[in-house]
Image (cartoon, rainbow, N blue to C red):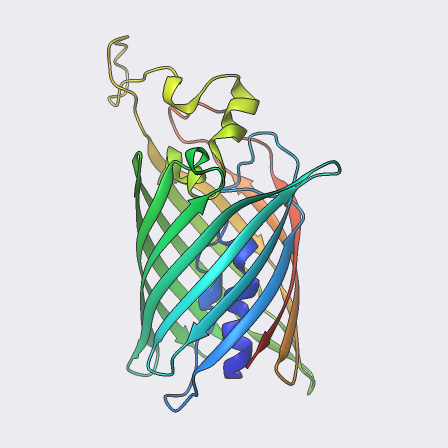
Length: 285
């Protein structure tokens, strides 16, 4: 894979992070002599979701982005999130990320990352900070990996993601398909690393902090028990992105299928399977 195309994938996948947060790590086969570069990007998602959930709010997302990657593995990125519908558009949040990624031998790669999300307005954000670790393995056209991310803010949260993908070049041109699958595990509140708290209020009529208390132990019914934050499999995501590159430009169109799975004890009843589309473009300097 060409270096500029790979880093373009990292930014084009902004709108898909909530469903498969490791999509940007597809087949990282960059040579050690790669040059440092800057990338600007813009992507669109037909439905804004996190872990397969949108709390019944129909809206699209627009995601401008800017990134820098040093050839030794250090990278930084700034992403914006704009949510809208047929009546209004609102600037929702700013994502600031810093990370380091290196290969281990010929096939393994690790990635360490720190991030901070600034919500607008700030009181709509529950989880502002995150620390992530990802390890993936590449063999031929295939890539498999596992990541874990700890999140902090007004509450704490844990997200884990197992993923697999392939990179299939089409003919002798600059087109490629990259089918991918991911299984996303997490605590119930990880959705609020991407979504504002107001979406939960609109769906349930209550504030997140006022949700009914639940006991952490199965079978125990104690009205005085503290609010639980159940952990489990929350979403399966299938995607089939089509990529095109020309010079230092890259474009992708990605149909996706999100299959949300309710976590035992979850307050909000999970929605049905959702098909959504992501479109993006980027240029690398």
